[in-house]
Length: 360
Image (cartoon, rainbow, N blue to C red; front, top):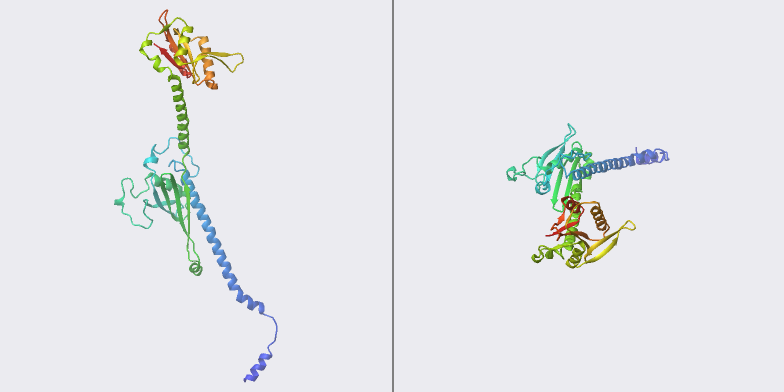
């Protein structure tokens, strides 16, 4: 066939668009399929990473939640009241630690593969002889036990590390997990990854009982300081005078005489105070500048209805803040030489916060 015949045949080829879709599809479909597969695998990778991060977060949060008591259940936090760690575990056993873990695919349960002391990376060789006492290569120490309790959330075949760092004021749980992800070889080379890796952290906050202990100490500390100031106000003006030797054998014939002496002793004045119940008042023998009420009693005084009524009024004055304190002074009676309250009366006074001073 010469060139002319070939040209003639080419010119006789039928013209039209039949078959163009097939040709275009055969050119575009491989690219679309490749992009779709890449999108699917990337989506699976992102999903796997999210699942792994959720597992790591749960492990970190649960480990931090149960850190105050290694006997707590990792899921519910329940524990028997008698099952607790030692009293001073925060001082002796709360040291930094790290545990390497691997999910057991045969049983579905995680197990501690190796204990890595703080300061050693997972791939670093470590001589057990270098461990100090109590840091042997086993999970028997308290921090490792607490870390391993949260490992029950570990997925099958997942490797990782559970770490605890104690920087005095900042205590933190760190969870690093790795799970294999099988890309096709071509995509793996392009994507450059065949393992899902994630990390989560959780702070170990102060446990509830420690917060209660601090709050209790603060409450009682304030109360003790207030009682100390009140005691100073009560005794500061007359304690030295009542102990002076020149007043030994001091005695009075009546309460009126004792009242005059008491006002001079504490630098106070007579006062009458209104109580909550209308028409009821309480007469104060001597109210000093610190608003401490002083009452004078002469002779031997026993508990009776009138005395109990006086005590009730004094308690009400202290409870409402009308006075900062109440002191009952007992003086010797010159007629019979008797002095002081009876034992039941003294117990009643002291149980109600009333100070008893006997001027011997």
